[in-house]
Structures are given as structure tokens and as C-alpha cells.
Length: 192
Image (cartoon, rainbow, N blue to C red; front, side):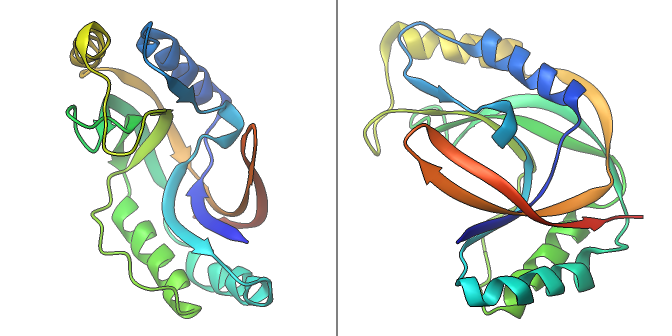
């Protein structure tokens, strides 16, 4: 099954993210907006995990994640991946007000390594996915729609949301369906 480790969000943050989606909704841009039930702060995508490895993954998650220090976080800014020339993902940034999110990411990496998932060498950019542009690979829309998106992103560059506490890390399974991914929590590790 496809698995990942993530921090779930409080309802107030979901409402702010939905508001951001509405503000970024540009006519002519084919964006598949993330539904609130699949929004989260991913610490580590684990990919396909064989069913026989899931119990070990849950146990290792408990060993490494339970009791780690919690973080005080805040939504800050919006942006795109990989860049404005090839927009693929629209996101809301996450700022650490207190705690160490990098340590939580390192612990998530250790969980992955414990079941021989290769090291992820990509930089860690804490964010929450707002939507994905539905275009052909390597292509980005142009014209007025892209100009309007750039203007909105510039206006929202200084966006800040409410602060919230990350008090647990969850292990999720993700199943792809025609209407989008469905996530199910299969483990939860309380932070201190």
C-alpha cells in the first residue's frame, strides 16, 4: 500500500486553506483542488509498502516518533512547485514558530530506512498542497490565466494564518480512486 507520515491539521487551518483555494481560483486554469480530508503536512512520503512490512512500519513509527518534541506552526505564504514557468502544484507554506520540524522529518526518514526505503535526497519544504494543475507533463498554461495567477500569488506572498500545534504524527495509507486519493490513518504517534 502507498504510505506516508504526516501531521494532521486543525479545523481552523482547513478553513483558511479552503479560503486560499477560493482566492487562487483563476478562470481558465484547470486546477484539481485538494479536498480538506486529504490536506496535511507531509513529513515523509514512503511510497509503496508491501503489506507484510506494514506492521513493522507501524512499530518502528512508534519507536522513533512517539515522545518526540511537538512543534508550534503557522501557515505563511503561498507558492508553486516547481516554478512559475512549469506550474504543477500550488501550496501554502508552513512556518515553525517553536520546535524543530527538521528533527521530525529526520525521524520520519529513520522510519523509512528501517524498512529499507531509499533515502529521500530532496530538500524538505514544509507545505500543504492546495491543488495540482491538470496539464500535460512539462507544460504550463500561459497567457492571461498565468499572469492572473502570478498576480494573486504576489498578493498572497505575505499571507499568514493561525498558529497551531503539531501534537501527533500519523501514518497514513493512500488509495488512488477516480475521484482522487483517499487517506486512512493506520497509526498515530503522540508528541510531547
